[in-house]
Length: 76
Image (cartoon, rainbow, N blue to C red; front, side):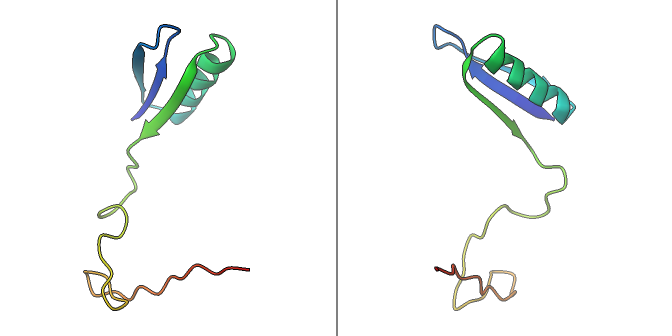
């Protein structure tokens, strides 16, 4: 499921649900381009997501489940 949220000229918030991503994207584009709505956003719950989102703790380079975590930001 996908949800599109937007505000009207009076800053009242609205939302609408869609089953297909293409329908939600087209509706968001229509709100922006045709109806000149502001603060248009789309959200979804990823049905392919597994486990908790993000990393909740890294201690001594190890995740809570025991996997190694060695990501480091490289700067130029």
